[in-house]
Length: 458
Image (cartoon, rainbow, N blue to C red; front, side, top):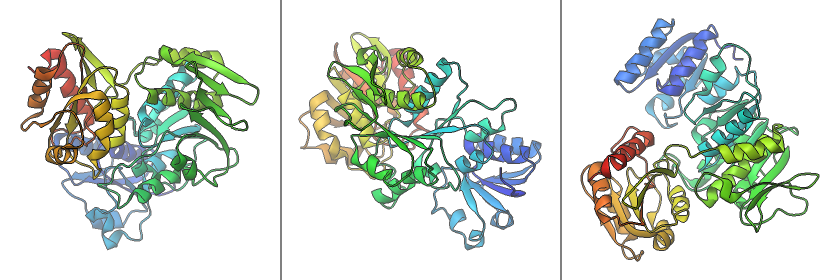
């Protein structure tokens, strides 16, 4: 619990509103603000006022924030933003919404971070635990603010599964999961971070409050992940999809015959065959193993793990099969907002693929996609703010047509429909943020789904 009596909240979107409501419920005086001014933000400000707090949109009253005991910062507000760099706030402690909510929790936490696969793995862990009869909501970066879970009345959940982004981990102080998972690491958010090392440093804060009782589930095939955890106390479990763990290594792997196997202290235990998973791609075998290891560490029996691995289905916007019509499969992977996520998606394709790349750039090099595009794409359509850059970086580097489509998103989907042949796939896996055309990746994915279901945008 926090003993701050005057709490400032920066940001009135989902996590900021939830933090303000949690602070009010705990008896604090609250001032919340957002630089934006939309109908949704005005509604959030009204709700906070009705609950007894003060809130405004369209700007921040720095003098009000300077009088607070604590400032809770929403993950969408960059550390370099004018309000956070104002010298009048230099002496006011600040934490992320994740940290603030954690101080109010009464349940142990399983935290999942990494560059890609966080939401799938977090949701899968929650599914495995709840399929075994435990209460285990998934919260954090996944869409349900952790503050909302902390404010719920009634008995505390058995576990809380927390998807933790680097932005959220940057503002922790006491956050200490009982079980922590790192899915993978790759360049991302270089539009916000000055370097890859700075991005990884925020991920490494997951281990900051580790103890000997901590359990870490780590990607054993990524040296950067293992380096991230180097020196942290606690027990390590690794997962591998292309190799078996060493004799002294405990964790999970995919056998030569395709079985997902747990290597426990007692024995190797086969769980399910990879073909029994309902999710596309080898990367989802890694996600399945990470989820199974975390759930096993939380006490889920083997038989319940098997059932939960088989029953977990695809999540929206993550290699989500939308519709198959006239022999063409349309796949929504709008959550792929960085190059590595798109490369993973391409490697999952088993059909000739029309690939849709574009949106707002995040500072990455798109030429890195060339080998995967050569192997899996039949054509590439680029669009949005990043369209010209992607076209320039791929031209001459790939052996398939690269075409820039100017105009609205509907024109991009219509052009994909005109190119697709029976037996093809059309894959939206943009490798970019969505903010040039959409509010977020979810809105982009929903629009793609609507167009595909309505006749492929034609």
